[in-house]
Image (tube, rainbow, N blue to C red):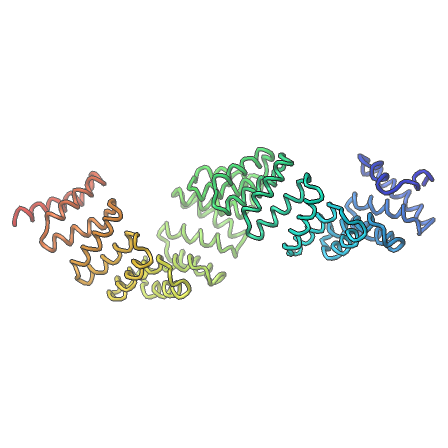
Length: 467
């Protein structure tokens, strides 16, 4: 090695090596190795070789060379930083943090050191420590997008989605061509319930990087949630074109196809997703819904039971299993599922509604009405609550009370055909066919050509004329 090179400081050496290809780096390492063998105390050559090893991805050797430099000079800031970077690449984050600590102590005010240490804290799950370091990095260099980007990700993990949006927006201002920033801001908007804004960000990410699979998938899920099923299918298919074994995209495709009534195709996608992820509760639940849509209730129950085994606190799966059990006439089993839901969530209106119907079906009308009374307390503006109680009153023979409740349901939802039909039937039983005719007229207006209602109206007219 020449005397001229030995006089180069580390920064000058790196500038000199900018743009040098791999083969030249390997030749340079060989020359540096000869110098080090001749003089094991040559800190500059060790530092240069350690840096080259890091550039070539040989991080273990980079750690070793920078460690030897630190042994020779514990105050060498560059060696601490270079070793920290190498440790970080090796995912040895605690060791990296120790070196960043030393570098920051020796040379305060280095924005990059704070940023990198913050990234290590984030990897270790110390999100508060990460935010603190990103704060300092931003104060020291407010025009660097990286700390804003990473602080935005960290705020997202902390559930502070408004702050995540703010930081990621600043990162995008500083570096508009960063698809990841758009993607993660879209995730933050999605978590805030602003689905349309999320889609705009996923659009932007895909304009910057067409084959960005995560953005494709996320946009598909967002469109699925907006019930834009055909559009979501396009995204899931594109994601699967990039990765045919993407279990999440297969699940999304299955849900979209099921929502469009294409149940056989949906089942194929969901089965394949489960081959890839056999213990995915989300996919099992989706397949359960698909089985139920096909009236394959036994198979639906099997899937929901597996979901509950994986997550005993999944009340949605328990409710879905309960409703499938009702379809099979296994009412006592269904009631046990609704009991379990209500024990965990005493304000679960859906469980009271379903259990009320189940109690009525087994002839336990007092329990049915008790459930419906609780449902009315929880949801006084929900017509289904009054319809359910009206059904229970009708089954136990309390026709006047049933008529009143069906009337309340209709008042809240004038297009509630079932409540109108039940009220009409009860009014005919009570000898008031004229009132029944008014309900039948409204049903025919809502559903022109409904032959059953037309026949019922004709009979009600005959009853009225025969009085």
